[in-house]
Length: 138
Image (cartoon, rainbow, N blue to C red; front, side, top):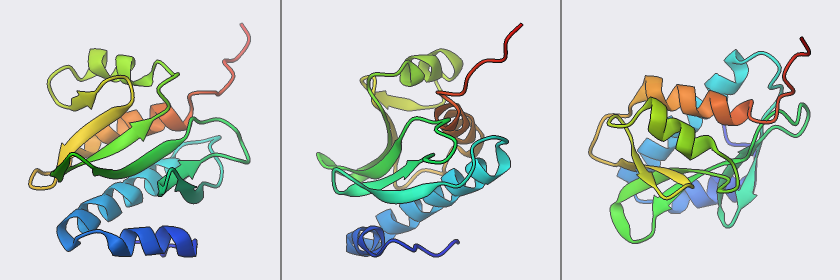
């Protein structure tokens, strides 16, 4: 696991119950690894948005913000949040109609007790990290 450099982000992760924290840290690592493996994304900034860990592409500006945290109404759930003004979650519903659970047009919701759907989430993370990438001219 990569060390958390932002003290505020580290504090938020430390505040979560151990089982939830472990799941969120695995999801965090998947975001960082996917960013590193995706050409053109560049360095990721880890910060807080709405009091939750958020991941941005400030150098390349290729992506839409990703945020992760617990689902406040359900202690056994956590979510990967996307900007609700994008078409990302609608796209994910089309590609993964049964593999993932969604909340409106803003989140993929996961259960703490379930295995992480690694491949589907990596696809979704990569799509978010490249959402604003300019398409090549023909």
